Length: 229
Image (cartoon, rainbow, N blue to C red; front, side):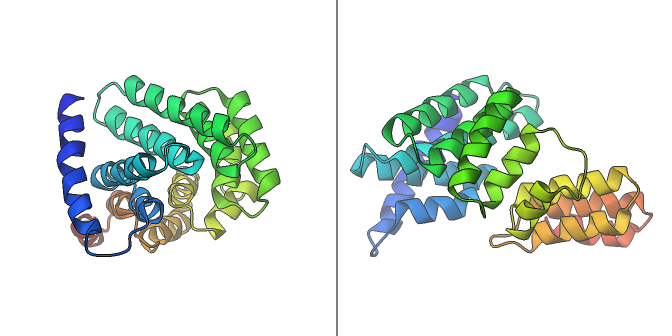
């Protein structure tokens, strides 16, 4: 955790130097980095949202995005066999702070829904996702989190399909995984490919495709995907 904090500090100086070049939207840049869902992307996103809080301490949006960043970082920690509880706690702090500052906002409900999902409190997550979807019925992330909270297994469920149509990267990956379990390899490949075609592309889509190609006996295709990931 100490090394992570040191990395954030050094990265913050680099981002600040970039910002001196002209007009800068910390929130918008942070969102773009968040969408990468990589170590570096999430770390840079945290720096952007923290910079926004430095200028606007009462920014509910910045707190909400910080919550989600820490939540997704905890997943990366766990994927490497590390404990992510401290990151989840940080995320929940920011999610609750966002709700305190703007109790009726979609951003605060989304942050809480995501953190509750990560903590496996699915009834609470469902309640928050439903609230976010009432505010913005077209939200891909709200639909995706409602599907996650419902612990669905149908790759063509309406909420998951809405998230896919809106280009929510993790929804495409989850849909691909479900198709793969059902033996629908071509549909799985299409979902994974969709994740790689987002802006910015989701690198995990290439790794999922590589694994699928290998399972299908397409060794050359697997190598190509690994090289792009």
